[in-house]
Length: 127
Image (cartoon, rainbow, N blue to C red):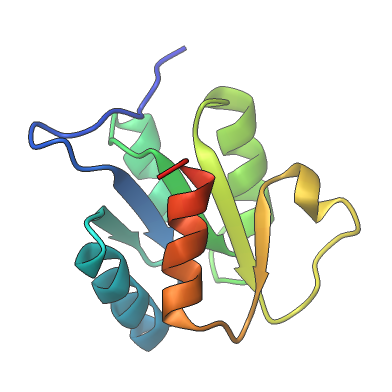
C-alpha cells in the first residue's frame, strides 16, 4: 500500500487539515504553519480522501467529524487508518462522538484553543 507520509524537501511535517468551517480552518492552518507545519487544507472528507489517494503527502490528518459530502470525518479517519495506518489522526467535534472514538485517534472537543490544537498535533507526531 502507498504511504503518503514523508517530510517535504525542506524537512517539514505535513498536516492534512479537514474542516468545512472556513474561519476555523483558516485560523487553525495559520496556527499550525506558525509552529512549523506544512498544512494542506481540505474543506470536506471527500476532498481530503481524493488528495491522499492521488498521492498527496501527509503525516497527520486533523479532521472535524461533521461536514457536508458523501462521508463525514469519522468515515475519513476509518479509511485513513485502514489504508494508511502509519498516519497519525486527530478528530474534533462539538459533539462527543462515538464511545470508541479514542480508537480512531486523539479527540479534541470543540471549542478548542488554537495553541492547544497545535500542541496536540505536535504531541501526536512526537515532536
